[in-house]
Image 1 (spheres, rainbow, N blue to C red):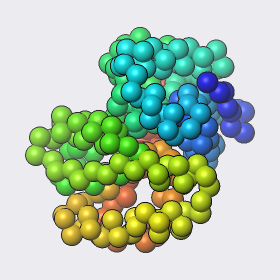
Image 2 (cartoon, one colour):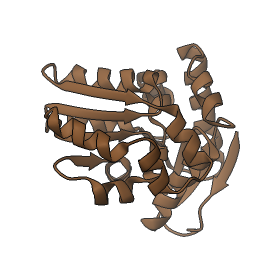
Image 3 (tube, one colour):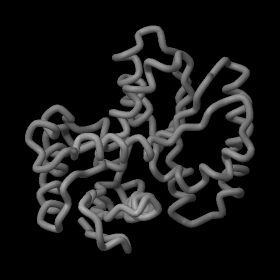
Length: 229
């Protein structure tokens, strides 16, 4: 595990960021910094493939790893935490983490739960099929009539880790074409179900018409602030 911090060094709220690799941990810290919020990050995997393999661990061991990570963040000064990783959020026992965690934790799945009451037809782009299944399970748990079209593509994550330009990633993986196809299928919202996808979100948003693109970051921070009052 690797501890990282952002440049904000004042303010009462200090948010811990638990993510898969150093890249999405940094994305989480950068997001908090853009909102003038102090952040401490902890990455638990060396690379995207290792992160995917980590999710193959049994649920109990993975949950204990997250609980231990929360303890480390508390030692560094965090008063709450964001689990800034969709796939990890779906692979652990969140009920146990919420019950036993040293500090309050918000995950992307908490945000998707809210979304289920606002839409019926969902598109989903995730890092892998495990993550797709877990996010779809969350949506269907709260909206039994929902329709979900999901795609898992670890290569996109690896291209982001390799720092390929956002425009090139969008072109290589036909993401603009994907949004058009989803619109034709009646999809109302495309969830970018991997925190790595912050990387190309602004550019893809420019190219997208007829469908809402959604990242959970903004609402995650709002929910943490609400719980910290």
